[in-house]
Length: 167
Image (cartoon, rainbow, N blue to C red; front, side, top):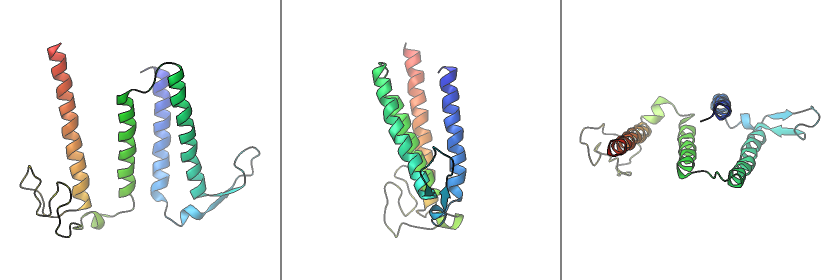
């Protein structure tokens, strides 16, 4: 990856980190606070924090379309791997956003109500394992996500290593 592309991505990533830190502190009431920009040529009047955040998102969506069309025009459309990277980042952000605002007690509560949920069973058994804690909790769900992702990245790396050896 060229250095200018790395700089752009690094800047976008650091901006995302700053936004995440701010968003982690907001509650529902905070979203109703108003900001009025008195700078000529900037925002048109008073906006709630909620509206400002929605404008950030729609602005990204608008310009994402410009970037995608630009890539098509120059003959370099996004590859499947690049689309998968984007989707993975969206899902990761959704999961992280779902965890924000919970506390340790919340994530350790049994939520199974005696039912099997996915392949995590209320008896504490994964289909392929027998010694896992007995409760079905938010913490277990996230641990399961992390474990399966680590396993699948390991498998992907092993497949790439085998490809190299076969070449």
